[in-house]
Length: 252
Ligand code: F6R
Image (cartoon, rainbow, N blue to C red; front, side, top):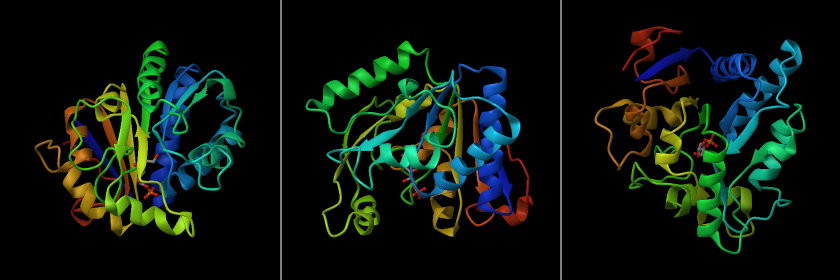
């Protein structure tokens, strides 16, 4: 079931998602948390860091599994996802770096690295709470349109639109064309999922994700198959927000 919560601003949508993580950590300090990268996550990570300080809740015993990595982008590259996580979150909270994982897009053998990542997640007991963003084409992690809903962590070709969006950040170098991503099947095994989206450019993707039935043309529609998903949206990303009113929760 997908529940939708609509907030006046993206910051408030992020704060709601962050408070769910903090609640999770309070109940289970060893929480296995799945995290994402991208513009949406900046405000979410800032909210998490703020709550960590104000509520005195620790990440030290939590485990973190990131969704994806670019293939061939080294950890110290300005656009690397590892660097993004360090700068937006890990340096601001008390995570144990030995308990933070990301698929290794620099691995010699990417298929072996992908399979190893799924084994690591299983060995941790599975993901308790997975945070997702959504692409304008409704991708989740780097599972682009056409991805099977039972896919495992794997190497994928990025969609033309995804490459184009990344191009400016990587210029003058060429943007990466492949990703190493948790599969949709891997994501659906998380016990709880929170998707965060803000801005009018996400509205159509959100509407498609919520429209039944689940279909491979729309990766985020796979979330309809899960029993516990929360969409934290701002009003601009929320189709029908006017009808629902701010803060409305709409069981799907
Ligand atoms: C990245 C990821 C992607 C992003 C999506 C939205 O780890 O999982 O699916 O969540 O591309 O990115 P932004 O927030 O930059 O619009």
